[in-house]
Image 1 (cartoon, rainbow, N blue to C red):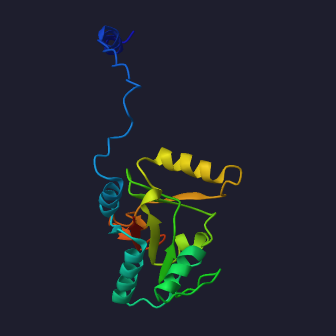
Image 2: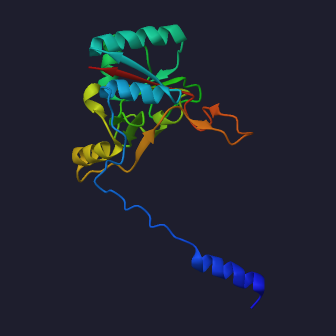
Image 3: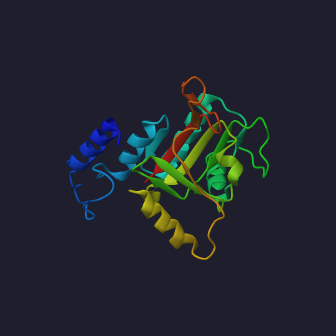
Length: 205
């Protein structure tokens, strides 16, 4: 046998192999959430360029939404979800409805299924009347939510949506974690590459 090869094999045979530490399956997988869920969600979404607006009441939320939309001077605002549309009408917020979004859409307003505090993610599904286009096409995506839709971890959201729909499960469930982004080109972060450039979540108590 080649002396060099023999030397390497002997070293391998004599090498000490430490026994790996046994995993503790009783330990939690995720870090604990010490803040109230709405504050944890806000903190984690805003770390990844999203925005969260917190309100005590639904009335305050839609008043704040109206003020925001006025300040950004957007005209082509679309919402196809009945409950939200009724509130937009009640607060005098102009918007349009259409099953097919036009190319000049500027803002899409939708609800959501759940908000996941741990990752700052918004869970949406094809069961929402707004349609899948609303989550992807508008440059500005606004989500209207309630505190009772907040959960701590992703598994709670999956359990919740399974319980909600049971045998009529949606054909698509998606997680939106901040605005669309890519760093494929020269490793420079670009927002809005494959979807909305801006994500804002309005939450009421």
